[in-house]
Length: 464
Image (cartoon, rainbow, N blue to C red; front, side):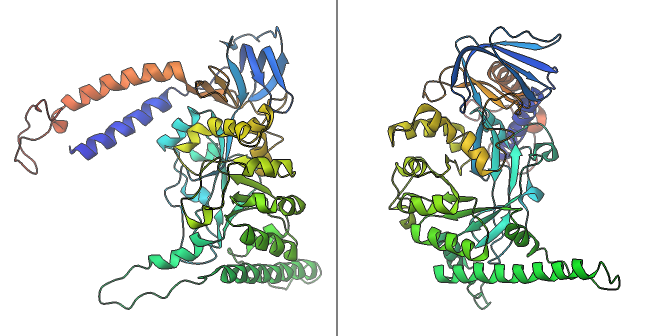
């Protein structure tokens, strides 16, 4: 077995081992003696939390555990709502369908990978819910998937039941730059550049798409009205590209729009007003602070980075005070990762908002919890610790806004999907299993100078 194959086997084994620790929990779990950061109702010290039937059943002091319940001693620890990442590409191998300007017919849910090791790592950072978006190669991209990170379960169990559907839009250079990546095949004429190549072209693509969607909507409305009295009428031909856009027009599908510059964001807000729909979130929106009142007036939210800028021309005018300025102007603003690595450190990004803009502790925590739930339309289910909400919580060794704190356990619907103590035990077990596997004859490194199949030899010290 090659080193690459051996590494792949080890990664697969690690994923199997990690998921093996996930087990169905008892009906109830009682977390005792914690400092509970409710996010929406203040901080509660020396407080118990009863999780039952997947929900937060009770919050208070001296709660009694039902028979058979799991007891977690959280004395000296902090409990907060599971972190929500409003912009992620975790769990998908196919990010973009860049062949067309409008790909509203494509669905992220069709390409979810429930075995991605990044899920487990995100859980180790206290993340429980993510918004998985199509890439930014298209003016109108694909349909999103809101997911709970139930690692070890099939993707069908991870999809957030009841979450409003959404769709990804994109503006700016990520769309127009796509034209510079044309593949040149020797002996063949170069492929034509994909429209649009400018921001005004992107505006036309949006206007054309929603004009067609409005006509499609009218055709179906007419058919449904007339078919009540005339059963001989034929229904219009279904159009999978336009159906999601009709849902946008009807307020049934949320728009999450990638944009950087204030002028292009304002263009999109004006166009949405023209067609009578709302932009739910502006994604990235690094120049959002320039038009904060206009964003608030439209009713859009904005999901940004904490302090990432100048990595391309569109990001030159970014400032770390962006989120704070937006919040002070009444915009529901969040911090997102857009990264399988950064997703594990969203708590630290939230803490930066207290430094850059003077947000309160609860306001900073909202940027990675409750505000994200609002942007995804699931605030009645997650985002804060309240009786009746889903039991999606993370137990921290210290205050989650401290760089010295780490997650001890992450629960989704009352089930433990990450436990630091179990993780340590699993690592030792996996290390022993790997050592045994490396001794097996098929995995022994071939003798120096030999290629292909040959007699196995004991690996040298250097090869080990």
